[in-house]
Length: 460
Image (tube, rainbow, N blue to C red; front, side, top):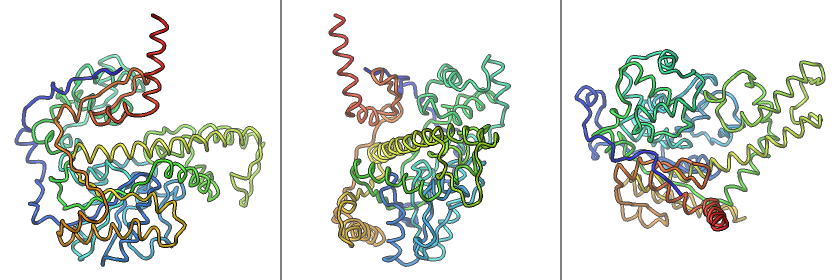
């Protein structure tokens, strides 16, 4: 039911040339790396809450947000930024610092975050990185980023290159097909919907004639994304809960966001001519309301809607608007639940493919319990023990805290990078052997396979 989109055996065995290697500062020796704590987990698991709670047990805690949407100014409700009163006096960094229209990449995050983290350490504090966006944390961990390796390559105008090959600048689907033809190895490393990187790869090829995959060779292939090559010594805490718990939380949180003024926030940045692939507008919770706001502004311009300063978007009573609003809210909940699943899959992949050795803290009981101190007993206490062991390098203590530390054999380049395409699930693309195995175990996949088998039997 699947086929390989490209063979990972095509990976060349060349090393980075000396000029490329010189552009990367090697990580410091493990004995001299300074310690940071990284709190990870899916949306709704309690990452920000835990980070603030840790400040009650360790001196000098400062939180560094690794969330790709919270970095933007505005939309505080939609991106679930920690309100000032809930920060409990703990300094928070990288919240609301970027204009909503600006694209903020993994490299941008790293270049902002590293000086902040080093400043906290220089003050004798403890940086607690909270994500959020796993790719941002990978940018901190790995000394090899595509944007670094390509930084000295001259820019070209993508439209010029597309004209040469007979493609339109908006033809994003065929751009990926073209990339597969010229460089199947590079194409298998990115998702077909990652249009920004597809464009960057084609720009690279159009300006230099260099295959993008040539940047992923030798040391870059071996060291990319592995914490052993990090400039910091990281203690990874993965706060997790059962899916049905997280799903319930997501649904409740969306309802609360609507009550707290989400519609008015999104209305302030709505632009009917804007794209949803850059800046804050790519956040879940923006594009879902496109039809609603298209009708709203059409009616407003026609004088059919009158609002004063006290009127909230949620107070509108037009039947058509109400129907579109209900549809948008349902879609927002569904898309956020899908995000939770993607985040959890990525965390599993970091564990099993890239040797991150995350301390897995199951917070399910804390969510269910009505006891006041349940969160502290089930989550905070375990994490405090882990961090204390990490700071003192008492590995025995760190292994007896009730968490699970994943340690898996290193996977080969083929297992890490091969793309699988599931024909049974509408040609869905899976990246790497781990993601493919997880997909095969899913209920939806098994049902689709079973239906296909039954249909085949009837035909024969």
